[in-house]
Amino acid sequence: MEPLLHSLGLLRSLLFTIPLCFVWTILMGGVSLLVSPFDAGGARQHVIARWWARGILLICGVRVRVRGFEQVERGRHYVYVSNHQSYIDIPIVFGHLPVDFRIMAKATLFPIPFFGWHLKRTGHLPIGRTNVYADARRLLQAVNYIREGRSLVVYPEGGRSVSGGLEEFRTGVFLAALKVGAPIVPITIRGSRRVLSPRSWHIRPGSVEMIVDPPIATEGMGKERLGELVARVRQIMERNYQGAAA
Image: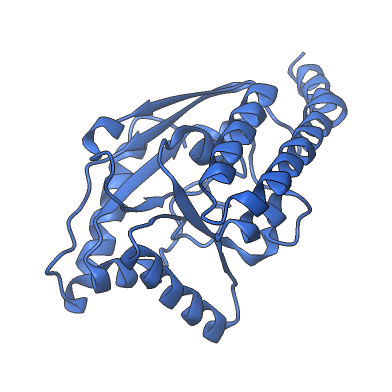
C-alpha cells in the first residue's frame, strides 16, 4: 500500500503541484517586474515576494509554525543565519520572516526566469562555489549592506544538506557581521526535508517549524573570536534539532 501511495503522491506533484508552482511564480514574477520601475529600494517587490512565498506554501500544502520571533527587536537590522535542508526553505523564509531583508544565495538561482530576475533586480547577493575573488567582492558588498542598515539572510552551509545534518559552515558572513558589529540571529528550520528532500520532485504536504533564537551580539568582538561565534550558532541549531527529525 505504501509504494502505491508514494507513486500517487509523486504523480500529484508532477502533474499538479509543480506546474501550479511554476504558473504562480511566473504570475508573481511578472507583477514584481511591473512594479520594479517604481520601486528603486525593492521594498514593494519584497512584499510581492512574500505573497509569492505564501502562495507556494499553500499550493504545496505546507503549514509553517514560527517560534521565537518575539525575541527580535522590531525595526532593528540583523544578520539572520539559517540551516538549509530543502528548496522549500526559501519560500518558508520569504513567507514567514516578517522583515525586509536580502539573501545571499547560490549564483545558479539568479538566471532562473522570473524568480532569479526578481533576486537580481531587488539586490539579493549571488554567491558562487569556486570564484573566490567574486565571493570576496560579495562579502564586501554584504558588509556595506549591513552598514546601510539592511538585514541579510544567509545559509552558511553554502547549499542544501544532503546528509540531513548540519554541514560545515562558511565563515565569511560571520566575519562580515563582526566587522560592523551586527547582531546575528540563528534560525533553525525543522521538517522541510520531509516536505521536499534533496534530489526529489516529490512534494509532500506537512508541517514545518521555524525557530528564531535570540540575537547574538557581536559588537566589540574581534576576529580572534570568530571560531567561538560560529561554534555558538552551530550549537544552537544542533540543540534545536534534538527531539525532532530535520
